[in-house]
Length: 300
Length: 309
Image (cartoon, rainbow over all chains, first blue to last red; front, side, top):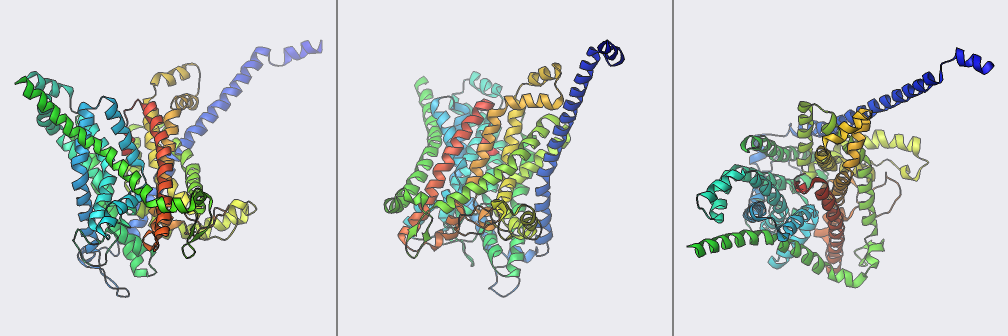
C-alpha cells in the first residue's frame, strides 16, 4: 500500500524516465559546449605563438634596422655597427643558383604530371617527389657535401646552390602540377579540335594559360628556400668578406644570423635579431603577396 | 605529316618525362652519398653504433644512442603538445569558424609555416629560454619535482624548450592537412548524426571518426618534420650528449650533432660517423613520411599535395 502511496505522490515512471533523459541531454549539451569552446581555445592558442614571435622580431630587430644594415659589410669583432650586405647578396645568389637548377626541372616535371601523368610512372614520380620533400634539409646538406664539396676540394657557393635546388625541387613539381591542372579542359579541347598536336596544345596553350600560376608557385618555393640554414652550413659555409665567386665559400643571411645569435657579443646578438627580421620580411612578404595574387590570377 | 606529328608528341613527352625522372636520380644520389660517406663508420662500429653512448673524437669512439634518444624525446614531446591543439584548431576551422575569421586564422597558420626555422631558434633561445628558466621550470620543479621528468636545475634550454619550439613548428602541418581531410568527409555524415539527436560536438565526433586515417597521416607527417628539424633545435636543446629522463636537462638530437660538428670533424672516421647519423635520420624520415603520405593519399583520394602544407 505504501508503494501505491509513493507512486501517487512521486513522479510517474514515465516522468522519471523523461527526467533522466532530460538530465542526460543536459550533460551531453554541456559536454558539447565544452568541446566546442576547447576548439575555439585551440584556435586562439595556435595564433598566439605567431603573434609573440612577430612582436619580439619587430621589438628586438627594428632598432638596429637601417639603410647601412643593407649596404655595410660586417665589422671586425669589437667594433660596433656594420651590416650584412655580403650575406644579403650571398643569399640572393644562392637562391638564384638553386632556382637555376630546380625551376626548369621542376616545372617540366610538374607539367608532365599534370598533362601526361596518369600511369604508374607518374604515380611513382609523385610519391618520390613527396618523399623528397620530407627529407630533412640537413641530410640534403650532407648529400651535397659528398656530391659537390668533396669533388671540388672545398666549400663553395655552387655547393650551397645545389643543396637549395634539391630542397626547392619537390615543392616546385607539386605546385606546378596543381596550377597546370587548373587550366580549363575546354582550352585543350578547343586547341585539339583546331588540329594542333598534343605537344603544341601543351606548349602554346596550356603553359601560357598557367604561366602566372607557374611563376608564383616557383617563386613561393624559392622564397621558402631563402630561409634555409641547415643545408648551407657545410656547403656554402659562410664568409665574413665580400665574395660573389661560385667556387669560394659565400655568406648567407640565415647562416650569419645563426653565427651572430650564438656569439657572446651583445651587439652581434642585436644584429642577429635584425637579420632575422629582414629574413622574415623577405620570405613571408613574398609568400603573402604571392598567395594573395595567386588567388586572383587563377581561375577557380 | 601524320608521322611527324606523332614523333613531335613523343619527343616532347619524353623531354618532360625525363625532367620528371630526375626526381629518382636526385633521390638515388642522396642514398648513394650518405651510404658511401658512412661506409667507414659502418665497417668500424657495425650495428653497435646505434646503441653506443660514447662520443669521443679523441679516442675515435662514436655511438649514436644519445642523439637518437634526443630526437625521439623532443619529437615525442612536440607531438604531445601539438596534436591536441592542432586537431582542435582543425575542427574549429573546418566545422565551427565563420568564413572570415576562419580565413584569417588559416592565413596566420600559413605564415607560421613560412617562418624560417632559424627564426624559431632565435626566439626559443632569447625569449622562450629565459621565461622557462625564470618562471616555468622553477614552478615545475617545486610542484612536480618528485617525478623524474622534472628533476634537475632550470636551464631554460633543453628538451622542454626544444619540444615547445618543435610543437609550434609542426602545428601548421597538422592543422592544414587535418582541416582539408575534415572538409573532404561528406556533409551527410554530420546531418545524419544531428538527425539522430546527436549534439553538435557528437556530430563533429562522427566526422572525426571518418577522417581518422587522414588525421593520423597529418600527425605522422608532422612527426617526420619534427624528427628532421635542425636549426631551431640546435639553438635551444643545449647540445650535450647525455641521456637523461628529465625534460629539463639539455640534450642533443641527430640533426643538431651534425649541424654542430660537421665542419669540425677532423678525422675521416669522425666525419663518417656524422654521415652515418645522417643516413639513420634519412632512413627514419623516409619510413615515417612514406607511411604518412600513403595515409593522406588514401584519405583525400590523392588530391592533395602534402608538400605544400
